[in-house]
Image (cartoon, rainbow, N blue to C red; front, top):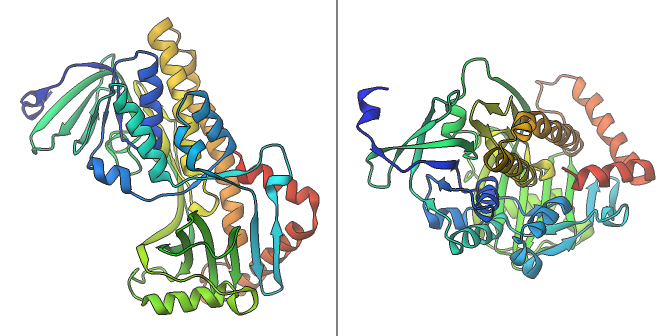
Length: 404
């Protein structure tokens, strides 16, 4: 151990140290706390930022069941709205798919992720859980030994070191857990070649469905968040700044791509937030490295086209919590040994459907005039036609759209 490491303030050891206070870290922390496991959560952002950072808002039925099973669904049950319809708009018109009626419990819950995170955080703190905000994890050390450690920077800027029996890396794609992975770790990466401009508008929803508009000028999407706030997406030229267009120009473009002249006007309002999203994906294999386990965005990143990220994070947190309880309370490491394979099975399934959805919604990436884009456009029209008319295709879509 280097001199700089030995000079760090030493924190009391814990059984499980959780990096990151997003959905994965907070679900994991709550489940461990309920079982009496000594744990702490380290979060590099402030408490205010954690409570207010806007993310996805569609929770799958399995996610709702997990939250209900562990007493974490009070806010979801009180304020969440069930949703089971999406509308596709193309040059040939529009059609609705009532996916909620195509299977058993195949509707989403619409509940903004920042609300879910706030619920999970308050539940954890109310029961005595420890979250250290403004505390940046810098690196994970000795993950292949019996007592890994994490070096951190405290809110006052001073260094510290934590030790634990296990470390759960729930701190995202740029966090300390990923930066500390050993040589030989495989990272699968794919760029779909598409960028979205994400918009959070202070405007009521303009339709009572998730709206997917497939236009020659690019994709546009409409997703309700609350009765007063709507999320919109525009396919965006990569490299163009998020603030390159005025609000007026953006609304006019949304009108064109969403077919407002034919299908009704969009409710307009100021944009509370703008952000750029490159539709890329990656997967880390394996998800276990000795005593370090990855979950949530640290384990895999999915393009946002199918809203799978938060749902996978909650599922992985429950799987990891069960495995850690087995090891810590009964000495049974079977769950930990199988954690990576079990989660990767769900991750790759979600990646496959997300890729299919991305190809459905977008024209081929710019290829310098390559005639192959016309071939891809033909495939896309065929997919839409099948989704419009084939019950078998609709059942498959419904099962995968809400499944994780």
